[in-house]
Length: 361
Ligand code: ACO
Image (cartoon, rainbow, N blue to C red; front, side):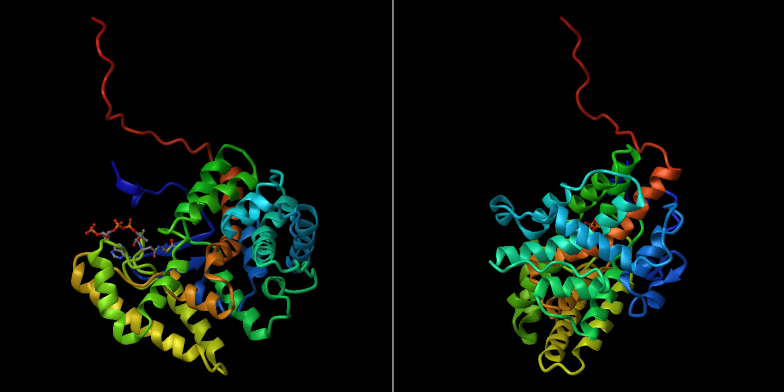
């Protein structure tokens, strides 16, 4: 029995490769370092989808823009029940309104869905009027415009693209595995994406960056870091943004995002101080984790600098998991298609350890 399926290979994939010892991530033949900061999200989605749909256009920018407009027009009706949910729960409920399908049309609407729903829910919850999508904009710029009601700067759109590209796919992580299991039953792409969203929202997976902000706010000043972190570990808590099932070294995505935050901080009065503070907390956490767990390498993961980047882009912490879904949805869809065209029903076995039936007296 392998606890948590650690090390079990459950699929062949052409989509991405995570090397946990070298700290390397390859997305469809490209190193993450060559993609993030240089490529737009729609281009990486194109890369991931390539070969899995018959009718792919050469560029997804316009088709994705039109999908945002269609999703907004057909699906965004925010009722009182949705306003009581967290943004990711409301986004999941709205996504469930999309019909299941297997083709490119269904895939593009699902690719657009978190990007349209999260800004709409945030604005509705704040009592603000909704900002409809603009099909002519690049995806990242339109997300920021729909969220904040004003055009994004080039630097902001680039920073969000760097993030969305960085999280677009990552091997057989928990949410991607969940999506592949559902896809293997031929339930359809919406069902597979809903499984992905549901797995992503847990704090051990994509739900960590909101709590990273809570941690930074709780610490408050660099000189408090050590005592605060020691106290959290003494209470049996985990440090959010640290540790990973696969990486035994630094998660390469952390440094890509740290570089993106640094680029954004040029010309800002506030951000450099926030970055320096986060670095002090990172250093203290790594020292403490090394002292306390000498046999288990625990390093920084993607979520720590995700928190800083999304905060700098003015996403409320409650939306961070939903923003993660805006990027990872590309991977879920590609994996679902890959499972559907080349895989069998996923149906592992369990070992029964309960009581045997009693003999009738
Ligand atoms: N802080 C403190 N201790 C930790 C942490 C952490 N962040 N992560 C793992 N450990 C400890 C565990 O307590 C355990 O110690 P023990 O053996 O003395 O009980 C040991 O390291 C191994 O932990 P596991 O739970 O077996 O490791 P696993 O591979 O299952 O966990 C996980 C990976 C869930 C990411 C874990 O490191 C964690 O909880 N991190 C904090 C939450 C987080 O940042 N999640 C985002 C992950 S990135 C992503 O999914 C996008």
